[in-house]
Image 1 (cartoon, rainbow, N blue to C red):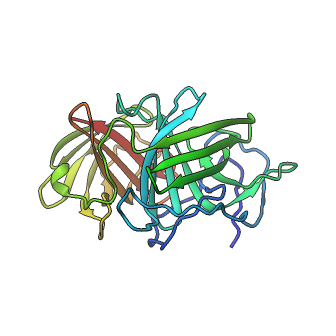
Image 2 (spheres, helix red, strand yellow):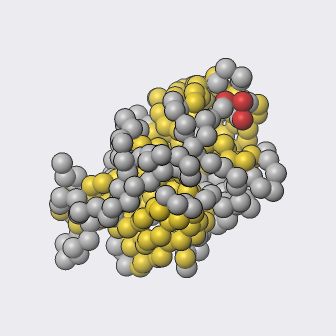
Length: 294
């Protein structure tokens, strides 16, 4: 099935789908655009033939569609990234100034196997950068080698046209292994997190995985559960309610996604949480993304 990237004033909804048996990156990516003024519509085309790249978490895991790696976007002002592939055909490349040293995210690229092209440009823009306005389309071409792991490839932005080389492997600054079972015990307690717009979110996680907290005057509550199998991620189900009337784009509703606890080499734990929202008026457009460490 083909997908169409529409004018960037509108973002697409996304959801975490069922796990697939293998993951390939072709120019991987699709669908959640940036805000800003509407630009020219683009034409949907069939997905390009994928670059063969079977991914596993880290040796000695078997072939697995799910992986978590990290590295550097060479030449970019915010070059540090963590690439999360939870399965279901979508991947998420979160980036910031230095994720090994500080818990600060400034954007993420949503990646899928489909996409669209711009007039006069034959590339399959299979990614969209949530921090971009017009020109949000990204052609993502990444290969993850299961031995190491090692990440190589490039990101090409449509407008302004620029290409960045990508290099990476294990998550920088962390001893995280994604082929180990996740534990709610790693995140029990209080967390002070920050979203991509520097807004604060507070969470209190109980030993049974239930959590509650607040975000911009709203009440946040939900559950964290280990993902089945040897996969070091927690499944997230959350609901945001009770937002103040002054908040015109009140992000009420349910969010589904994942959370990851990264043990840091310098000490402590870094906690990343992502949730896909019920519509495109919610946290950061259609999703909630926050990070913090303690």
